[in-house]
Length: 365
Image (tube, rainbow, N blue to C red; front, top):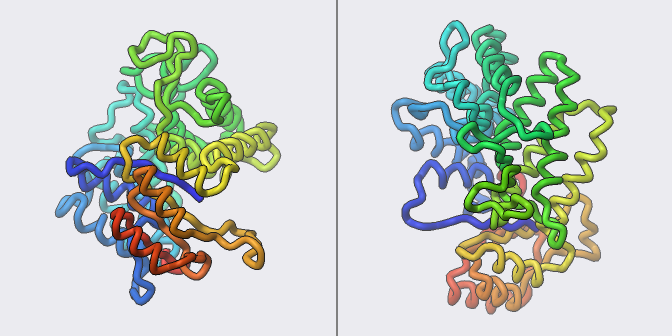
């Protein structure tokens, strides 16, 4: 099970909405009769609607990199070259022949600007064109001189002095790890691992195990707790950024690296803190207390090695009542692997409380 809390206000920009959809494919409505997978349909929407004729945003942004990474996944799963062509054409709007990147300013020291570098590495590996390697090296050089906390953690941005944010790990570390693996900079993995260790050390709440969104070493920010430096809130999307960055980095971290076991333990703690061990109903109540804006989504799926003879994911009328009380907006179920008790009553309750019930099949993702 996973939970996601996000705003559904009318002011949400289309690009942010699609970004969330690309990250949370399972939250979309699915018809098993569709010829194309949901991920292909979303990719098509992103490619035709986000930036219209330009095929790329006007500036170098992390959101762009997230979308390109999603398109890369669709390209790899389908073998359809027009996804790769779209990525290359878009990045060519930014990357000059000498490897400089239009609108990017290294002096900003902004970790958000690193994320799109992952697609530069893809282009270099596939095409061998040196301009992509040079552009990736420009981003890597930023990390060499990026401001840090006293114990070595990257500031999120120069304009946010002494602050580490969970999302900063996603913005920088997967690129840092892939670059290091690609160009055989094994020593850099010590620094990469350190960022995760420091972030958990400084942001983890001992009571819940959840990670605060930010930490201010100076404790001078208005939002910072004067004793701990913690931000006042947990932000589940930021915890998702952090967990996904760990998963991505572990793909490149050497199997014999001395910090590998510790990073896996951190990832397990993070997942357990979000999921907890309390069961679905108690988890829903906890999600409601954390996601005060409402409109959040519960995704209920079977684990990869779950014994379906004895432990089948199940929802019923009580589940819907709990979701309504916790101001949820949607529940996503894995088709063929979820039992709905008193199905008609469940559907009637969901209709009454305006809770969407969405089914998906893994083969359609």
